[in-house]
Each structure stands twice: as C-alpha cells, then as structure tokens.
Length: 362
Image (cartoon, rainbow, N blue to C red; front, top):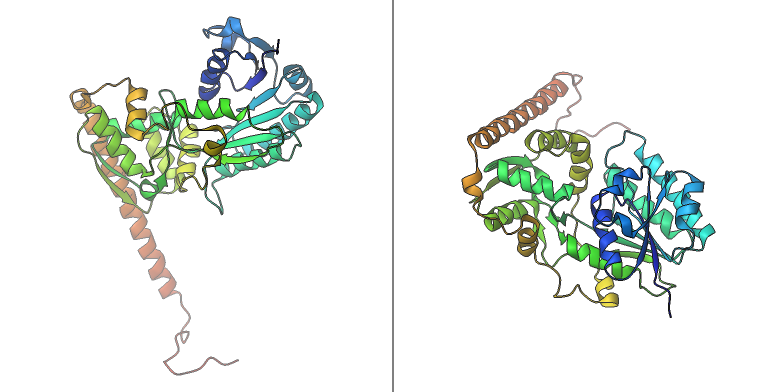
C-alpha cells in the first residue's frame, strides 16, 4: 500500500494557509504545520488532524523538525507590514527555508507569489518575486504560483474591494483604478496549490494563475456593486495620489490597516495580467472551469444582495468626506506643481534663453 503524501504548510494561521490545510486533509494528505505559537491553531476545526511543530521559521532547528520526512513543503510566508527591513528579513527567511529543504530531502516546494509585469516593482511585490527566485535557486524542484487579487471572504485584497465599494457610492481615487487586473477566486487558488504538488519531479519554474476575466479595478468595484445590489458606483481616478497617500486613504475608508493596505496598494500600482497559462495545460483547469469574477463575488459574499438598503447615513457622509479630502489633495498637488514651475522660472539666470537661430558656444 502506497503511503499517503505528507505536506508541510507554513503560514497555516494566515488566510490561504488556513484554507489549504483542510483542503489537503480532505483529499487524503497527511499535514504538518509550523507556527510560532501552537495555541493559535488549537481553535481550528482541523487542529486534531495535523501534526504541529512549534517554532520560528527563522530558526534552523525548527525548520529541520518541520521539514523532516515531508514530500511537499508549502511556503506561504511573507511580510505585509513589519517595518522597513522586511526585504532583508523575507530574503533571509527564504534562504533559510531553502537550505533546510535541501537538508531534509524535500521533494517539492510550492510558493504563492504575486502576479506582476516586467520592470521595476513596488518594494513588497519585488520582495515576493525575490523570494520566489531564492526558492527556485535552491535545487529543490519548486513551483512558484503568481496570483493577482484573490477573491474570497477573509482575503485582505477582497476586503479592501468590498469596503471601498460598499462605503463609497462616489469615489475619487488613484490612477491605478484604471490598471488591468486578472483576479482569481480563492477556490481556484487552492486547486492550483494542490495540483502543483503533483507536477513532474524535475519541473521547477514559476506559473501565472488567474481567473477568466481581465478587468480594471474600477470595473471590479462596479461589478461588486452590481452583484450585491448596491447600485451604480461613480469612479473617477486622479493622478496625484502616491501609493503612501493612497494606502492612508484606504485605511481611512476601510477597516484594512494602513500597514496592510500599503503593500496591497503597492501591488495594484502595477498591471497584474497573466502572461502564460502553462499550469492549466499541465494540470487542467479547476473542476467546472475557472471561476468568473461575478460568480467569485457571489461565493465570497454568500450570495447576499440588497446592499443599497444597508447603506447608512454614516457611510454616505464618509464617502462625501473622502471625496472632499481627495479633491483637496489634488488641488494642493496642482498648486504645488504650479508654484514649483514659477519658482524655477523666477530663478532662471538672465540670458539663459537664447533667441532662435543663435547657436550655443562649444
């Protein structure tokens, strides 16, 4: 009789990890989780079905205990806030994990990263891409799954979309509201994470994963409102809000903390559209096909409608206040640019503008 496969899930107290554990158990996997505090998983309904290793992922001894004898290791660790040294910390965590996986003879690493374009990236998204490179360079076969906005109840990116839509019937927001995004339902993410564990042993690379729809963030806001019965949303984007200001704006409107909103906004600054579909070719699509955006919203909200009736005077007042705030920021930024231009013109040395046809002396 073939032994059941054994998986280590890091980040099991997080959103994706907490859903992946029961998904693996229900399909016959043996599962071990690594967490700093074992009491944090004690209340989960799957706690008595897993092996728990208590320890810090930065400690080699804890990693050696957690990785011993496992076939597949799921790396779901990354910093969403955590101070200015998160890039160094995340790199060190990935390097330590990669070295421990080699020592333990792990058969495969699966890592969930972010969908991204080529070129310069925001610090948080760039760090996640770097972690993928570290794991791919370990020598252990690694599948790096790159996803955009994950649509599911409890996902921070979904919560941000939800609260922005529900609380702001009229929205003046950053220019990234016009960026193209390929969101993905959380059920599809879990399917790909499970399927990636069964890839051919020698295959080690990154894969883009996404749903069937490519939308702008403004389209997603309008779509969420349509599905949940909130009514029409007016969305206007302005070019003056930096990612930092935009994250403060998100923190003002939604319960998403600013330190969480900042990396989320930093990722949305970039377009996030899959450049290839190779994983689907290798493992097939999720059962029933990839989940369309509106269906994913229905699942995430439990099919609730009638959002317009839930709209309170407080939320309308908040929307008006934020509208005024953003308009004020735009006005200040425009005035600042004008003042800088006038200052440069006033400070220009006499004679610096040559008449037409007069050549510069060499």
